[in-house]
Length: 269
Image 1 (spheres, rainbow, N blue to C red):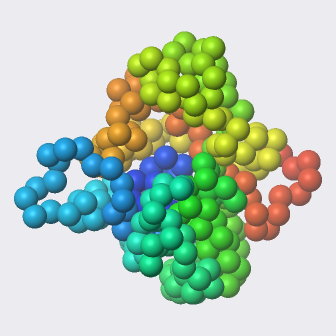
Image 2 (tube, rainbow, N blue to C red):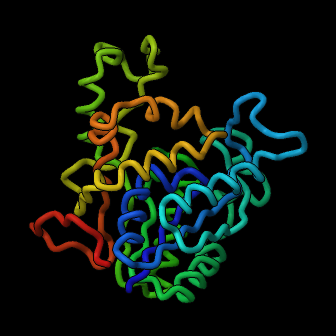
């Protein structure tokens, strides 16, 4: 049995990029650990969702526990740092915000978990944190350092395939002929694809997770407070969802992939 540790910024982040590999690893008999850096206190929440006296932090902790159960996670660890909020907001520099903490301090806390679990594979984020969120960028810094401190055999950056995203956007009629950042009717704001993920040429690993796609969708559903993020995907037909989320993409950083090596199709568990 091997151990997979997935390090994420907030409750709900675990689903998008690693939900499939977590469920697959668990189904194959491996130990799966989910570590979140922050409490998710600055996430948006639909009006009327919270019970009387319930805080968003309490709700999000319950949601991530339910998501972890769906994804076959054996242990959930929260490092206890404050949510830094989206880039450019006041939370970025608030005392205790994850984006401001000393990297060595946070890495030491994560490394303790990695050693305790004898981690085989650690996933973090790419250097831009997928899309530039301060907490996600800090996950990259802290996670990479922790992997080195704990001497984890394999460290991967979970990311998005920028070329695949571009294809999806070009295939979406609502986004056609819309400039980056423009409002597309019925679809919200078109994202700047060049700010997301990594180009396919830099990705070392593509894991087909369509066999566990139903679990991935179910994990999305339990994050009711974050329906603004998940809502559009929950309405997709399964074949469409498979195109969008049926492959999880990574760049291996430890040990570095050999030049010209064939793209991996699974994590080394």
